[in-house]
Figure (cartoon, rainbow, N blue to C red):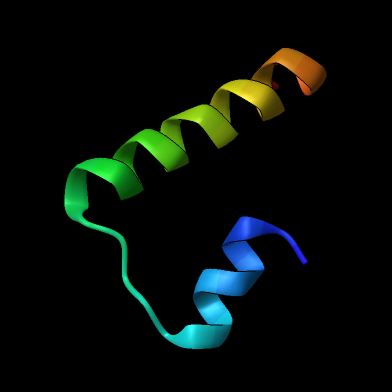
Length: 37
């Protein structure tokens, strides 16, 4: 189980700064793989 799935299963919310960092990292991976179109 991924870390994200584990946290969702427990219903734990990340602090704002950690959630923002997680979101930005995910966006960077998507844009790096697919570009911005």
